[in-house]
Length: 368
Image (cartoon, rainbow, N blue to C red; front, side, top):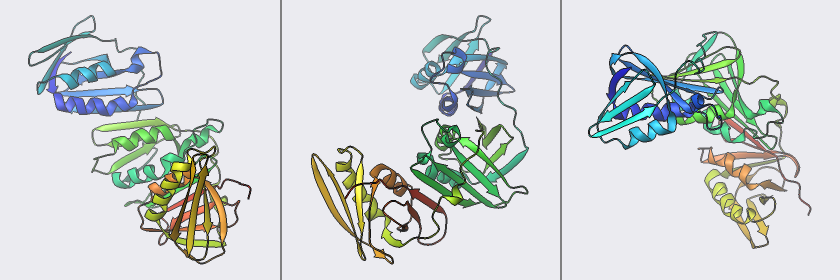
């Protein structure tokens, strides 16, 4: 294998594929990146057996070939080089000489036969989506994914598509996030899949700066996202996702319109004291024209009042501050609507106009 390529192109490509490198496995090949040189191209591939990433950059090739290099080491080496062009040459003992300006490194590589095969792309189902919309939908739902694997399917985010409508849903037993969007081009068949939350968190990072539509293809066990020259793949989760439509209250007895930013800032200030307590608790007292937020701990307390429009009953309720703040942070609207029923029923946060999102947060039971 003998080739040269742009240092900046290579560094960008290494940053991309590093999302697929295993950080837990003791297998050397899963801690490495597969370099494949062919037809004046360099393809980089990484996988941790759950997700996989591959991308290509232009290269000037003299001899085609393949080798595996440790991901962390090769990335550090390329980052520190000062030249604009990098030259690679490997020998029959899987050693790679890397040259750039006055620098020369020799790294020991690994043979490629033990590297896992990259899953075959299936066009059993496919659609295209704006990268901006896809990133926003992931941003809106990724924090509500269950961390415990007691119900493995809830460590994922459910993706539903019917005609032009697309939805992402996540829940962790304490809160639920539902984000809705619309595709420019509809699909012929309705479908739904469950994607691991950790996989979508990595995809979220890769979507930054992407401008072209993302092509999504999947089969029963695997999903692929094509981002220009990059392909990101993940296995799909199997299992029965909760019927979320039935657990979101349709009616409310306390219906509040409030400034999102004012509520977020007040909750964040109250959380400073709540974090010092045992259960990260903030209390909310909804009155006809104002909301009082309080939090108390051994180190002190906080008391704040915000103007609201309450068209329903008065109500006192308490929440885990983190769950409420997480929901508010991913909402871009100036005003939001909060629906409540009882001190023990969930809060449902929706837009004042439209239906692009729904957040449901369970309260914390407290004694008077």
